[in-house]
Image (cartoon, rainbow, N blue to C red; front, side, top):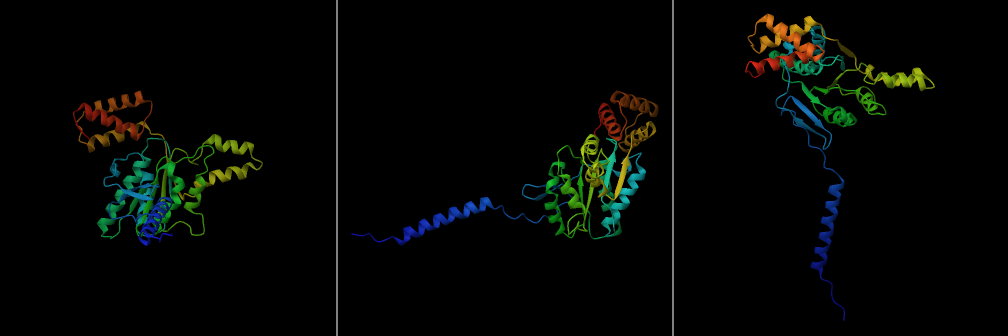
Length: 297
């Protein structure tokens, strides 16, 4: 005696198998990233996992006028950024040199100043700022592709950019800046800060020179990354006069009522104990001073 098949049971089993198959496919193939909402903020942080831009409602920055002792590079960066935001030709920028002299602060302050200028002129568009972390440089092509579809002009900003031994991710950066048949989108510019002018350790460059069959070619491969930045802005060690100018500017901005002679003496003593003078040291002194005066910055 043969039993007849149950169509309902067979259909249920087939449906169950299809559901499991669809679930496996969904896990194996990640969903397409959602288009970023550029109206949510003027600044974003790039997260390569999920290929998403996280809005930053309030950017941690100082006013451009508070950055003392770097007037020449300040004006160059603002001018380059304003030209780009206005739809004109502009260069990728490498801000390099002494630590604590306001390289990253200048980028964020210039971004705010340019947007304020655009608003005062009645321009409809606003310049966007996207920060990419050093360890995510390999994902730069993905970020470029995402920004290419946007009509907004965007600065990609990488703070403290440098490369160590056996790190080949600099090749991704070279290709993203100018390489490839498509080239860099005209609505995207790249700003980076670094303590190194060539972004690579000196001993790494010298090792290439000493061990390569063609030393010149090996070194050129490494240092040519910096050439992708059309504008180099150098930041040098802070003089005592520049350091004191920063301290006085901060004190006036935050309305810290202190005798000028005492402020000078205390600021110099603070720099001596730190063993250095810089914009960062000046601001740290002002933070300490405000705390002693029972103030908040």
